[in-house]
Amino acid sequence: MAARIRREECMARSDELLKDLGLDVDLHRRIFDAVDRNFRETVLAQKIRPARMAYFDGVIHEAHGGRVREIIERRAAGDKLIGTFCIYVPEEIVLALGAIPVALCGGTSLSIPYAEKLLPRDICPLVKSTVGLALSNTCPYSPIEDLAVGETTCDAKKKTWDLLAKNGDLYVIELPQKKGARDRDLWFEEVCQFKTRLERLTGRTLDPERLAGAVRLMNRKRRALARLNDFRKEANPPLSGLDALVVMQGALLDDAIRFTERLEALNDELEDRVRRGIGVASERAKRIMISGCPSVLGNWKLHALVESAGAIVVCDETCTGSRYYENLVEEDRSGLEAQIAAIADRYLKIECSCFSPNAERIDSILRLAREHRVHGVVQYVLQYCHTYNVEAVAVAAALKDAGVPSLKVVTDYAESDTGQLRLRVDAFLEGLGR
Image (tube, rainbow, N blue to C red; front, side, top):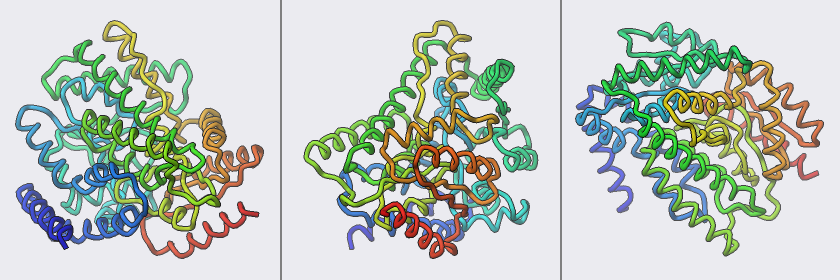
């Protein structure tokens, strides 16, 4: 009863904030009541969760409440909000200029109908959900956003940016589609131009010492995430794949310093759980890697399906997984140009399916499968995501050669196919048992 009262009080405060921002409060409540219910029925329904996961639950819960208030206060002090749609946006540069990076990607199906008034139905649900939150006047970051940063990872995004660009408040970084010498030069120039655009926006000049500090902070954050995911290699992992996903979603929203400190504390608890033999999986649980598209805030669908079927997700080869935290920026570069080159080098190592050829990504999938001792891989493809869908053919072939079974799941954010997917996941896991 007390928890329900506290939740209602928090929602009332959030409604007041959203009203002050000029949003459609009733529609926001309808959409995010459903998101909250989904979170409670999947994530919060788990047993033997680490106690310090409560903070990361709060990050998700306060994404449209306390975090928005915090950013409003920082903007009043002169800082800028930078909305991002992809992990290729160099966070070090944003942080070094005193700005606030926040991921704006949508993970709910309920905002998609509002996007389909502008966009075609047969494109990526992530793009439509994100745009739908803005067009339905339910995204609290839209009124306070100083700059949105898109990128050219796929055709759906590129053409959507063309439709949305206005008044210079949407900036697009061009990502090359290969990783040769010319492509690296292009990418370095794009990162330099991004730095110049942010300097103009913030009225601040990028300082080598501040940039070095931001690099150290982001490397510390990545090391903490890598440590958390190392615990998932244990024979009986001390946290579930769902909880690891919640932490990763929080990484894209929360203040970097506070998030890292809380994650380091969670890691200490996980180490203690390992020492005491406290795990979350049964002895018979199959170890599963999820590979492919990201699962952003609001989307816990596939992880919940796999783990409710008795398996455990021990690795995520996604943008809400290993791609975000693998590879550090070199910290010993001196001089601003060399520092920016080190940042550009690190971000170009991210293995998105937009690159061709893309042998590096397949090598990474095989490496992660070995390190996490997986029994099978579920390739997660958001509907109409052609790059991951086509590349899934090569991934499946490489996994087969390595003796690792795989299942490709093509889906969107809706719940209408949950029954069908549950049957396919159950059959896949049963096959691994044989």
